[in-house]
Image (cartoon, rainbow, N blue to C red; front, side):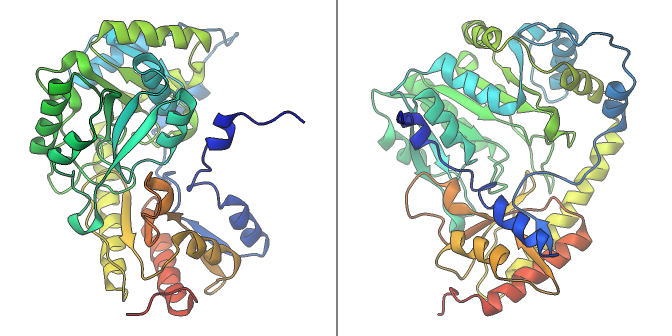
Length: 400
C-alpha cells in the first residue's frame, strides 16, 4: 500500500472534534451531553438571512464570480465602514468560510518553509492551515496567570529570523476570549513595520466585545496598510456556522490578485451562503444587543461558577464566547475523554476541549480547558454542576 503523505501524517486531529465518537457513545447510553467544546452557538440565525434562502426563486444554482458576488462585496464594504474599516469592494474576496480565507492568505503571501509568529494558545486549526501550506509556526506563549495578555514585544524580536514573514493574531481571541488593547496592537504594528512582515488578523469575533472594551482592528493601524490581511466570517456574527461564508480583506491589491487565483481554482464560494450573508447585513441592531446581553450573562455564570470550584482558576474574558480555565488535573485530554466514557451526574455529562491542542509548544495546556459558553443559562448551569461533581471523583485530580 502506498504511504500517506508527510502532510497527512503531520496534520493534527482537532482537539475540538477529536472526542466526538466518545460523545456519540455516551448519547447512545441515554446520557445528556452538554457541548461546550465547540463554538456552535444556540443563538437563532437572523430570520432575514434564513428567509432569503427559503424564499429565493432560483431555477438554476449556477457558478458565481470567483471573488464572490459583487453585490455582496459592495454591501460588505459598507458594513465594515461601521467599524471605521474603510475598504472598497475590490479589497474583499469572499471565501468558503473563514478557514479558506486563512488558507488563501497563507498561500498568497508565504512560501513553504517561511515562518509565522503566533501567540499561543491559538485557534487549533491554525496548525492544520500551516501544515497544508508548508508554513512553520513559531509560537510565543501568553500565560493564564497574565490573563493571556500579549507577551512583550521583546519576546517577538527574539523569534524574528530571515525566514520570518508574518505574525498572526486572533482578536478577540479563540480560545481565551482575550481582547487586544490599542497599545498591544501599536506594538505589533511597530515590529511589523520594522521587519516588513505581514500581519494576519483573524477578526471573526469582532462583534463580541464586552464591558465597554474597545474593538480595534488591524485595519486601523496606520503605516502598515499594505501589510495587513484581515480574515472574517459570518459563522459567529450571525450564528450561521454551516453557511461556510468568510472573507479575506486587504488593501494590498497584489494579495487580492494572488488570492483570486486560488479562488478561481476552487471556482466560487457557495451561492446560498452568499445570499444569506448579504441579506444578514440588514440584521437590526436590536439582534446584536440581545445577543451581547445574553453572552455576558453566560460568561459571568461560567467564570463566577468555575472560580468557586476548589482548584479551578478562570480569567475573565472580554471578547468572543470562550473562557480558558486551569483545572486541578494533570492531563486535560484524559479528563475530557473520561467525562464522556466513565462519568455521569444525574445521567448527564459534558464535552469540553482540552487546551493542549491549542498550543504549539509541547507540554503546555495540559491542565487547561476551553469552555464555549454557547448554550443557554439553564444548560450551562447543568454542565457546570457536572464539572464540579466530576472533579470531586476524577481519579487524576491533582492534590496540593
